[in-house]
Length: 292
Image (cartoon, rainbow, N blue to C red; front, top):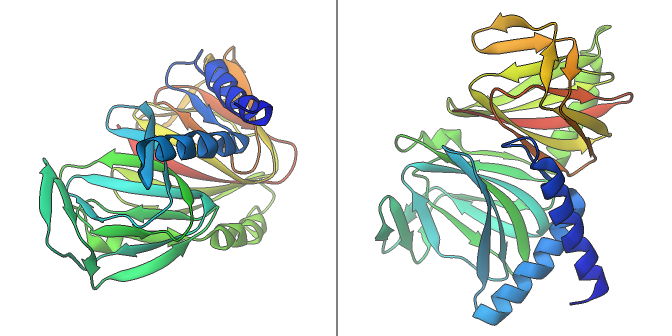
């Protein structure tokens, strides 16, 4: 193993190990994806496959993984599982909708087929995010290589196909000036991009420290778009107050741990866990919320 590969993998493993002191909190630095890309590429060569996925963590009704492809995938449909993809490296064409040609059931609720007939397609590049509702056929077409982060959400059944969502990196970045204009003397502005019931996607723009927050039944995935922040997680909320059903706010956090986050970094914050975004400059980040 090369020294460069060793350093990259060690960086990723060290970051995950540090985060493990708060149960359910996981931090995936942008710098670590290069290590995963190299590691999975080696597995693909050894196994003679054009796709390999690695499970990262499972959190009850949702779980995360990292996958790499260097060729076209088959058509797929997950009857009770929604996919959220975040593109990390390379490029892919994603076909969604339509119907699966020559479908076959490979396991309970899992359909595979040759190709998709009809539907639409989008191009995925680093920094793009896409949401594929449960039951919607989809197929990944890759000419060279594509690495992507996946969060899967367990559903009770198929979702409305209109719930398909795609946001490019530039789409997300364009919200920065819009949200900054909405501050109106405050240090935070938000925009909910979509709400699918069991999970949602929103953007947050900050120019200063946020309050401590606790969501009793809701998970937050923080995905940094621009700027830098330190996320405090764990411990106890100081001066807690209830602001809504299952929602608590506080003036700060006593104890816990702090993790520095930069553009491209991801973090999973479990439910009922105090957390606070600390920042002194402009910060734009996406939040994927999952209800448990």
